[in-house]
Image 1 (cartoon, rainbow, N blue to C red):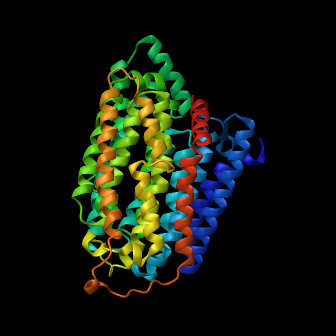
Image 2: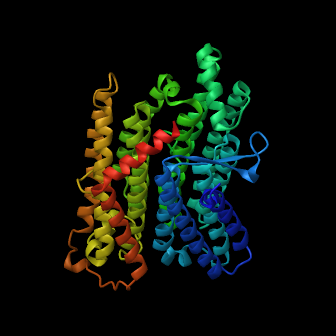
Image 3: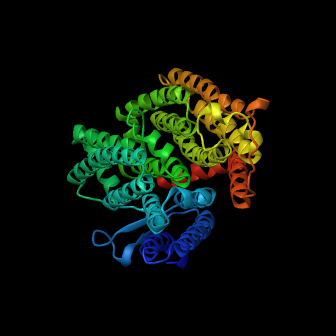
Length: 497
């Protein structure tokens, strides 16, 4: 075994160990440890991605070098390594972009707890990406839930506590359904390792045995992870959680947490159930319907909002609908489009949340649209960044959102009975996106009346500006250099199979 094959294990263990160490460090030291951790894990992921790209083959790592069933397994391919690297980039930029507000949003005595939650969140995301064992996935699903809940309620105002309770209730419902599906699957196959379950499922399908229980199991697992990733109509916790948590928390929750659950579902579809078995089930049609509904009603809810952060949060409901619509198409290109949109949405939504805080800071702290009038002039960098994010969400060429919608349209064309609703939903959702995002962009660039004008001095914040520039470049890179990314996704999905 080559030394580089230890990197997935090192990444997960380092993240968990950093969380433990942070509990006894002063807040400033905990912050630097968190930054060093994310950078280190990002470097390990980049090296691993280069190695896997060179070999062209995935590998399995035995925890403690004990084979199953005595040991646990980690599996790494190009898709896993690339996703881990991307998650680290988004987390690093999100933490840096919201750092200036953390002092005012969280009590200084609780900063240690905040960084502990971020470290545990990173460890759980990495585990969901790399694990080859379903029960281990369930354990880290719960760690992810606890850390995300902590990040929501650490501000300790009424809205965040209420949002955290809602989030916990819905997450426990999703976790319960996922665990029930896992137990049923173990009862049917006698295995917990993904590869072993896949072999058993193939045998059951060939024999025509336990067809109904297997369909119910697929439904339980899909429903559990869909609820946890806030698929419409299980999104009621999301607007307050994203809208009233800290800036960094909102950026990470919207761009990473739900995507970790969706990536786990995609792994289960390919590595556990089998893509062909899943595509033939009726469950895929249910995900398609709820995805389409989420695309429309999430955007309608965003239009009705008068709070910029809650508007961005409701937009996430629509974007998660896009991802499930692509999964529900049941085709390879549909799955490719969904994974690309995971990347596009993560890069864009974190940009929007961080840019929005710059606009509200120069609007007397108000998040109401009427008070944001002219904010793009008062904070030019935040205005440009929000505009770029908005254009990407609408699907303007040159930005990542355009490529996502193009891939979804390509995936839907030619489908026997899903083409028409998918294309119509894409068109309607795009129009709705343009209504609420362009309305906001116009608002922040409407000149204030002279009598209402207020002199507001914007402090020079080089880190904040650098974060916005990095997000803008990342968005443009995904839009202009999409072909290598799409090829990387396709090769990763081939390795899944």
